[in-house]
Amino acid sequence: MSRSSHSNAAGSRQPGGKEDICPVCKSTRYLNPDMRFLVNPECYHKMCESCVDRIFSQGPAPCPIAGCARTLRKQRFRKQTFEDLKIEREVDVRRRVAKAFNRQESDFETLLAYNNYLEDMEVTTFNLLQGIDVAATERKLAAYAAQNASSISANNARASEQRNTQIAQTAAQKEQARLNRAGANRTDMALVAEREESQREAIDAVANGQDGEGSKVILKKSTARRTAAEKARDKQRQQQQQQQSEDTDHDIYKIQGLKPVVEAPPEKSYDPFGGVSYERSYYTLQSHYEHPWLDRARTDPSIVAGGYDLREYYQRTMLEAFAGLGCFIDEEMGKKEDSEEDRMVATEGAAMAAVANTGRNEGL
Image 1 (cartoon, one colour):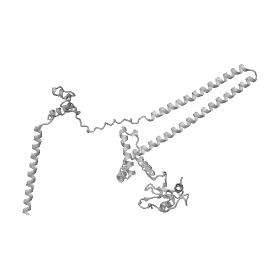
Image 2 (tube, rainbow, N blue to C red; image 1 turned 180 degrees about the vertical axis):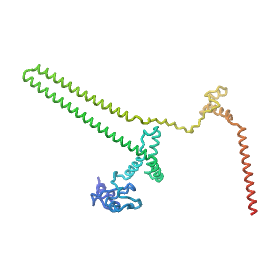
Image 3 (tube, one colour; image 1 turned 90 degrees about the horizontal axis):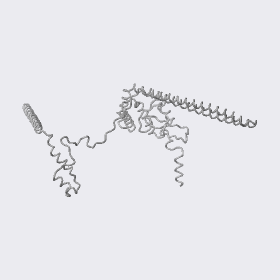
Image 4 (cartoon, one colour; image 1 turned 90 degrees about the vertical axis):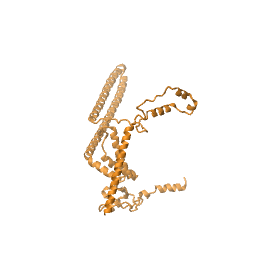
C-alpha cells in the first residue's frame, strides 16, 4: 500500500472528523471525549448536549442551524439511535403512522380490503417521507386519528394483550424446556449411578465367589431400575403431550369469534380492448364455406402465396352483409329534423333579442 493511501486511511480514522464536530459550537470529540450528540424529531439536526442546555434551557427557541426556522423544545431532544439521520426520521414517521393505522387483518371482511388499507397507510408514510402534499397528508392523518380514536385505543389494548400473552407463552415454553432438560439430566445421572452400583456389586460377587447368584441379583436389580426409568420417561412424555393438547385447545379457543378471512377474487387478465366484444349477434362465422369460387381460391397460388387467409374474406363479407341490420333510418331522420327545428327556434330567438336591444339603444 502506498504512503498516500496510508495517510488517507489514517486521516479518515482520526478523531475530530465531520461527524464528530458540533455544527453549532464547533467543538470536537477529540477535545471533549465525553461529548454526546442529540437530535430533535422536529428537524433532525444534530447538536451537542452542551448547546442544547445552553440554548433551550430557558424555553422554546428556534433551531440554531442556518436555514432552519423550526421552534424546538428541550424535552424533545433525544439520543440518536441510527447513524443515518434519514433512517432515524423514517423510523419515527412509520412509528407515528402505525399508531393511527393499527387495525389488523381480522378486522376486515376480505383480504382485498385489508391490502387496500395497508396500501393507504404506505402511501401516507411515503408522502410524509418524501415531502409530497405534507399539509394535506397531515390533515388526513389527524382526521383519521380523531374519527377512529375509540377503535385505535381498543386495538392498542388488544395488541398489548396479545403481546403479554405471547410473552407468557414464551416464558412457559422456556420453563417447560428447562424442566425437560432437568428431568433428562436426572434420568441420565440415575442411569450412571445404577451402572456404577451394578459394577461394584458384580466385583463384590466375584470376590466372594458368588458368580451365578450375584449375576442373577444384578440382572434383577438392573431390570427393575430400567423399568422404573422407562415408567418415569413415559410419565414425562404423557405430561408433554397433555401440555401440547392444552396449548392447542387454548389456541383454538383464542381464534373463535374472529371474522373469517375471505380470499379476494383473482384479478382478471389484462384486456387491451377494454371489454369490447367482437362476437356478432346476427351471425356465426364459420371456418369453411362451400362455393366453387372459394374452392378455386383456396388452391390458387396468386391468392394464398402471400399468406392471405380466406377467413379474413369470410369475416369482411359477412360484416358488410349484416352491417345495416341495426340501423333504423326513420328514427335517425326524425331525431335529425327535431334537432334542426330546435336550432332554428334558437336562431330566431337570438335575432329577435338582438333587434330589441338595438331599438332600446336607439331610444336612449
